[in-house]
Image (tube, rainbow, N blue to C red; front, side):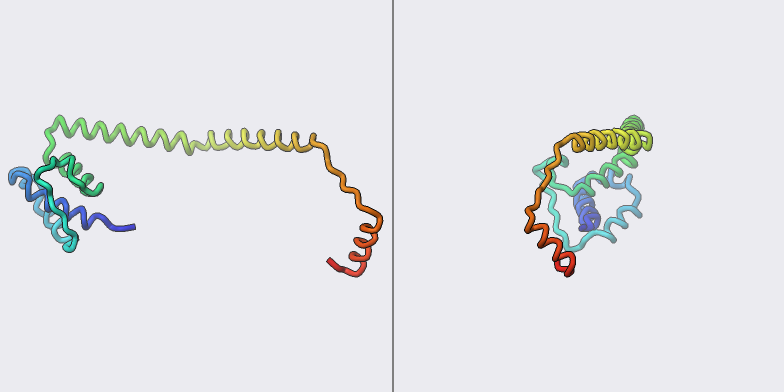
Length: 152
């Protein structure tokens, strides 16, 4: 698994060069210094000024960093409230899905249903006719001697 955060930091720094200074000044300088210190110096990323931010080909990590920067430093109080409400809703939804998937009561119910299916399959197998293989007399003699002389 490749560490994309160093590349994402490089993309963030390059994009911040095109963001108005008053917006960049809202971000703590320690955070910007961290991005600069940890960015991949060999990674080349160029911002296409003819494309909007949404149209840029960015790493998912870069988008996540900008989402956090927007929420923490650039968003109005109303936008912050809406973003936090959406994040809370998403966390609750994910928790409900996990609970539904890994609920111990449901796991045991599923096992009971599965064992019922297996019992039905065994009953069907018990009702099937059994093929009886008849051995010829000389085959019985050969098998007898193989057993006596321990030949497989």
